[in-house]
Image (cartoon, rainbow, N blue to C red; front, side, top):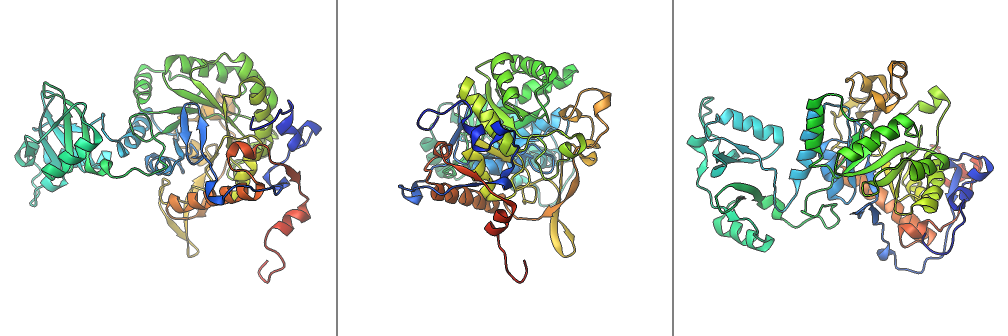
Length: 495
């Protein structure tokens, strides 16, 4: 823990759950504290397994929130985008590949094309991968570069790549340093530098775009590529072709997040153990909402210690979630965080806790960290961003975007991809546990994330916490309905 010895019910005592209370973010307030550090020195970095995130905020695995574009921006800004699974495995693979290609010193998964391919096919491939050029390869050797600049002014559908490509491009050998690559790109006045081995076989690609200064807070792997998360079923695919694609996905994704409404079930835990034994990457499991569920997972699930790095908590708190209304069962995120945090500190403090859903204001994020969170996950704040999937519409003169729960009938109508998020078997697939609606269009995610980070940092300053772990030690108090009204704008003409 941050400092001093904590009781076995430390976080639960804070929110009175040991007395049978189930409080939400609106029910508490963080008490002011003594601040002895300079505001510029507030540190919101966090760790989840072996990964460090300069921004402890993740975008949710929802099909109206996180696909490749959102995941790229979240990672560049220091957080993490968790791509949804409400689509075929082939599309999931395509999306995680896009994130890994987006920013990296050396691109290993290079998009290539044959010299005998038509220009039309090359243009189509560049559009699919959202890239500006292709390496032309014949018999595994680099023979040219094809970029948008090589597209003929007079379009000829039957023109071949070899007729218009830049032939015999200058290449670099495996092992070139960043500094050497920059110097070579300047020397040849080109934007792409293929990397080859001693036999001239393609091994990678360096682009001028990726050599530009990195975002200072970017979440990157050991190869300088952006980190990416993926929501996953708790079960292995039933057919061999999907399993083969999942194993290919495994070579690109960094963290899997089991995408289940209530994970504390034998079927889900056994299935996830099999997933962990089959795949090579790290797992955050969830969602759960009680001390008992966390205790069971930490002591009896027998997950491989080298792959199990986190637990995601909260059930029924999302603004588009109706699970608690439909079933009578739930665990608001504040309550769930405190419950699970105590279990983690008791049994395995190395496990990270991600508080998921229910955030309405930046101040709610600060509250989550006072009750034991290591990071938070949200869809509500990001559903209206430029980078979220979907189109900007106009309703009543106001720009909006569609935002829907993964248990809504609209999300389920997409296909069979995530029905096991709520239940297994025919009996659990008919009841909608979410809604679909509109949220205001909020512009680029950069501006939204900046506000959330400012709110978190200012909350830490007022509470007297220089780091997120110090937020764990800060005190909270229960607030009445009238007290909550007083903390917001009031006694105004419009309110």
